[in-house]
Length: 94
Image (cartoon, rainbow, N blue to C red; front, side, top):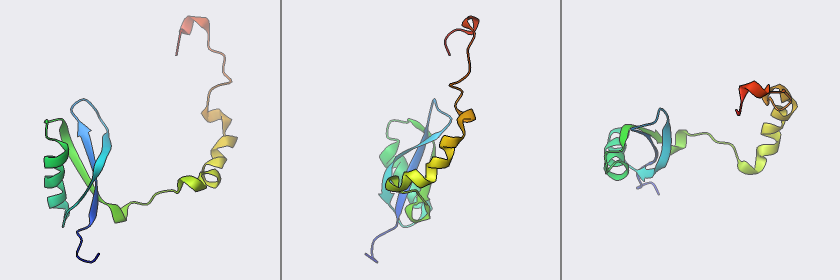
């Protein structure tokens, strides 16, 4: 696999959004070519206003099967979830 170009993850910000979203992956020799290829592949209908490319080997991620130990501490912080507050009727639906 030494002859294969690196894998790039592609993120596009749409016309009506403020955040980029992951749209796919592609192989390219460098970031400049990854951006050009991403433009051609993922924005054919002029739907993007910004493209991010990230070489996949630089992304660190959690393992879904090991979510327990990582996310359990947040369960003890009930103040982050305002489910125990009484909402006055005049406030309406939130």
